[in-house]
Amino acid sequence: MNRSFRKVETEAVVVLNKKLSETFFEISLEIPLKCLSSFIPGMFCMLSVPSKLLRRPFCIYKLNKNILSILYKVTGEGTKYLSSLKKGENLSLFYPLGNGFPVDEFEGKTLYLCAGGTGIASILPLYNFKDKDCILTAGFKNNSDLLKFLKNKKNVFISTDDGSTGFKGFVTDLLINLLKKERPSVDKTLICACGPLEMLKDLVKKVKPFGFKVFVSLEERMACGTGLCMGCAVSTVDGYRLVCKDGPVFDSKDIDWTKLDR
Image (cartoon, rainbow, N blue to C red; front, side, top):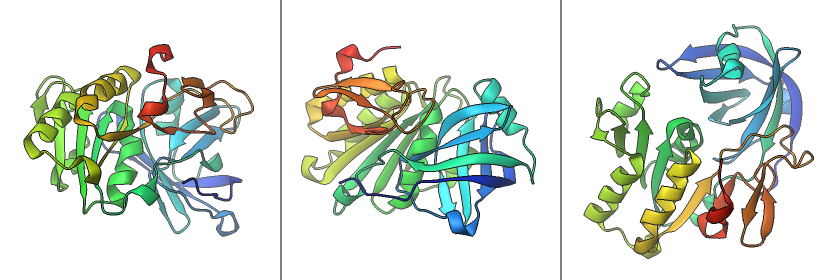
């Protein structure tokens, strides 16, 4: 069930830009009180710095009163510039956008969450939203890439590509191992995932024999965030849909995975 939220475009002030690991940062923005809205996990915002940073999508991490926080990973020039912003500098903010995870379906269900790389930014808000009945599997390249605070969280399982922390290998295999071990009820379990396209394809393929319902948050480049530019179209069983407007969260069975490629 999609909910309607008031969309707001405003100037926001940086109050914190903290380094969490070698590659991950958390930036917190102060929003004018008259521009407050709300969100559900999986929704995103668009950020830009006049003449410096093109409008880019970022998942909303937290919204505490009038402080909106974003968890991001430095992957290119845009996010590198974002990491250099200091307290007191301004950003243009457009939020909340897209459709998040179907929280109305979560009642009485246990969530198995799977995050790969930058996908942790979309999955952590979901973990914080429903931590009592939630198991999080998170994959990182190595220990330097790892968000250290996750080690102290309950029901969190870590994988690294090089085995420097936790399970060595793909986070999808870590999740499958847990499902085989714990054998949760199909009727009382949902899987939610975000990460690189190949990871999501692998996850959907490996989970299919279990029969669990899987929701995925797709990572796509976009320019507008509202569906006007049509730059983030993906093929579904019902035709093309826009990640920014119809997603970024989709039921995995609705995606035509054979036509999704990079």
